[in-house]
View (cartoon, rainbow, N blue to C red):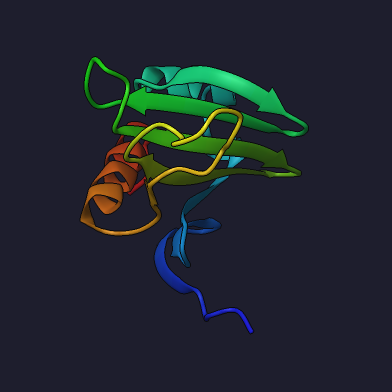
Length: 121
């Protein structure tokens, strides 16, 4: 059974969720740019498209890791941003497994930074 989701209320339909993921749910009507422009303005680079989900990264150091990794999906009126911190590269060729952090102070700080950049209170 999944754990309950803790929710910090921001504005109507704009929330940060914490349940092994840091998630921002944004109302598209309140956004001035498309997802690619929004994330680029926040310092993220487009990484790849996987189905209906876009992936963006923001390295914290020149070597590329650790880095913030955001998965962005558009659903109806909402833009969902799932955020985590990749600590290092995948440890074996062809693998996607990595040392990632899905909650904590660093991610909370990044979520707060994104919230401010996106004009949320």
